[in-house]
Amino acid sequence: MLYHSKNNTSSSSVDRKRNGFTLTELLISISIIVVILSVVVSNQSTYSDSASLYNLADQISLTISQAQAYGVGVRELSTGSSDFNIAYGLTFSLLDSGSNTAYLYFADRDANKSYNGDWSCVVGGASECLQKFDISQGNSIDSLCLIKTSGPHECNDLARVDITFARPSTEAKMFFFNNGGNPFSPSEVRGVKIILRSSKGSLRSVVVYYTGQISVE
Image 1 (tube, rainbow, N blue to C red):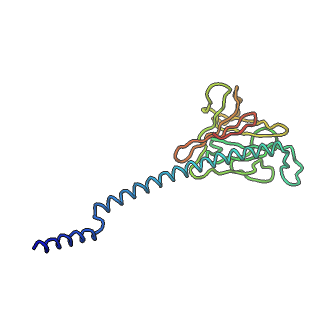
Image 2: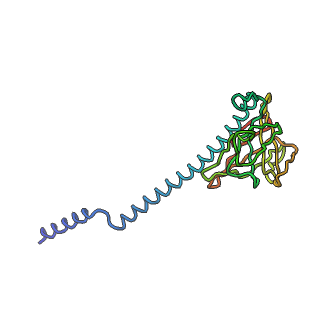
Image 3: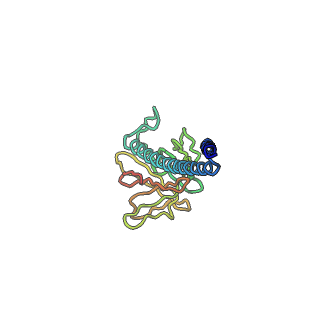
């Protein structure tokens, strides 16, 4: 009887080992996998959000640098035009006539340091607009700020800024518009900060000084 009982015990133990995961163990394993996947997906989403904002800031910085190079380098407006005295620049506008999800690259044909035209950016003919850059992936222009020679930046009244470069100087020319869409000339200003916002609320800035220095913060 004792020998027979030992056989039953051994057989029962083997049967349990062959059963594999219990329902509780399976649920715990699935929960762990779900948590790990959630963390991975969340981190990937955050990384993608930051990467797209960084790329946007770099793109704007490079486009401003290109305008500076074309303006100083005496680039011909169009092949065969023999017009080498054009200033090149960018305009950023949060006014109703502009857009917080686009900016324009333009040629300052009449040398008034400002973009003349609407946001539809019709290219060709007498139009000053050379290219419209649409901001995608949920990013946008959050605000425009005046960089003061002393004290904090002023972001409340600046709704549009046009930045141009013309030979022979590498310095930037800036034309400001207030919230009413009217030009104004603030004092003690060193430059402008273009603050960008991602879909998740991250911020990145492109800074342009009157000296012609361009940086990303």
